[in-house]
Amino acid sequence: MFVDENTGCSGLSIDVKNPRVIYAGTWQVEMHTYGEFSGGAGSGVYVSRDGGSTWSRVTRLDSRTRRLENRCRGGAVELRIACTR
Image (cartoon, rainbow, N blue to C red):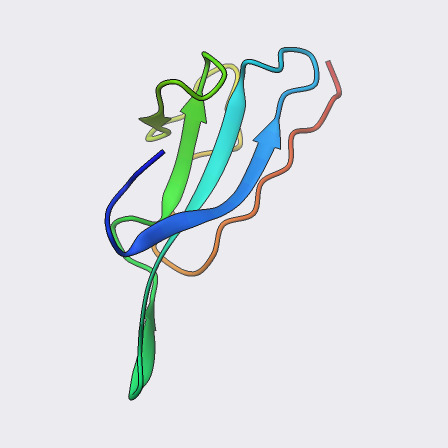
């Protein structure tokens, strides 16, 4: 998956009930000798429902991602999937 030249994947979580569903947290960061700029438009949560072939940004709540509303503009994003269902 590619967001942009300043954004990388900061965490992955695979749905154990359906391993084709993968969530990725991304983190936009620029490092320079004079400082680090962390967060930005590239930071967020993405989901793939086809084993990682295609990705889409999570931008609103739905039945599968009830707690993944994408408000991230800060640091690295870590993800975990709760197996309660």
